[in-house]
Picture 1 (cartoon, rainbow, N blue to C red):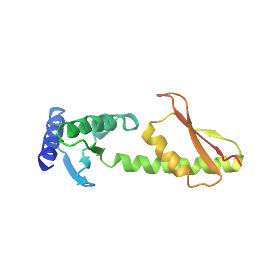
Picture 2: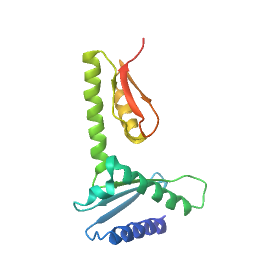
Picture 3: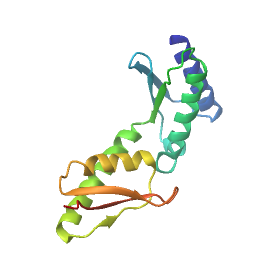
Length: 157
């Protein structure tokens, strides 16, 4: 696994250097018996370019790095990569949890369902998980990608 970690680190270093970013730090940790790699990159203020709109570029990085990791593993077990830049994913998760809480309050006060803006599957999962903490509410997804969104409403009795 150490050889693969070094290979992924080299790929990321080459990528960021080719983008003329010289001030960066790459931290890679292995978890769950080496089936999950967590990669955190610290970048200067140009980070938003690499994060993309609502983390879209992060998801692309994650997909490519997961494919690279799984190409180099000899067993049939699927390995995962979690990729983050400047703590964006943790901040985004907190924002979405706050949005879910505010929307839940709105649904309970106004007694009507609320439709949220379209979002990625990862973001929808965070909202669904947060709404599941409210016993009187439930959430469901509607629409087709890229317009798939969440609706939050009262649970039917």
